[in-house]
Length: 342
Image 1 (tube, helix red, strand yellow):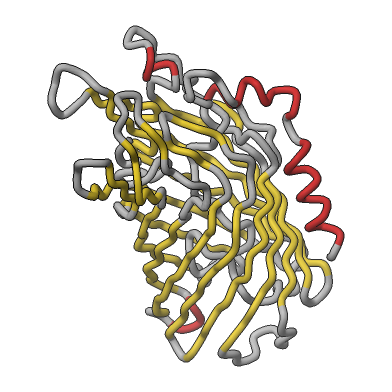
Image 2: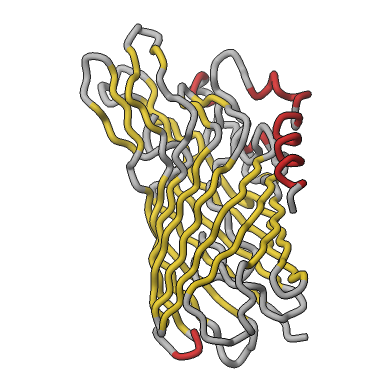
């Protein structure tokens, strides 16, 4: 493979274990080519943020509601290499390209709490689908399909007055991805994904930085030997405000999602895969604008590439580095958010 509130945690765990039991057989086919995964690993935050992928650490502003939408183009997020007469192997674009539209909404609940909703859908994509690995005559990936919707609950640790100077912010975030997406379009997980996270933010003069750390807990599936299960999400970013009042900002961010499930296995010809790590990772350069003519409006543009942090070593061979599955060769993102005044 190449390029490749206290009751909520208990509720998420129960859903994680019980979701999709009726279709569990479909998600564990004998050929090891499960369609029960989402090829889009980027989760856009519902609330306005300085970054594309890192949620805001600040408390919600005193506005009635946040609305938005985002477009993400991922090139070759799932690319496999199969054995063939060519020494380099046969390249299979399981998902060759994917354009995802995400509708976003968030609502403050008091001074420190807020809830969010993200409704993503693949509006245009191409590829062979999982059938293309075993059948060269088929190219059956649907051109569109709904992805798993996400709910979030956030709590800001510090209740800074709005527009007051601040240096450090912290926020606890509970996210829940519901397995309602289209599996045939590689747009739906096998189970609920429960993703608690800690978000930190720093603001000093025109400099800002942010980070996110937390797991994405899910039931594992297998795709061509790779085991995709629970991941650790790690994101970091930094940037500067080019204009006063945060009217124009530029930032760079990176995230990785190392899979915590063992990747060691025995290949059909007997070779052992050892010291294997599956680590989807990306970086992105982003530009954010807040036009003064429309209060509450923010626009974001970004672009970046995958980072080859995955690796494996086979018996009798050296260690090979590659980009993990769901890591695109490059990504382009655009997002707009609006928070109307009360």
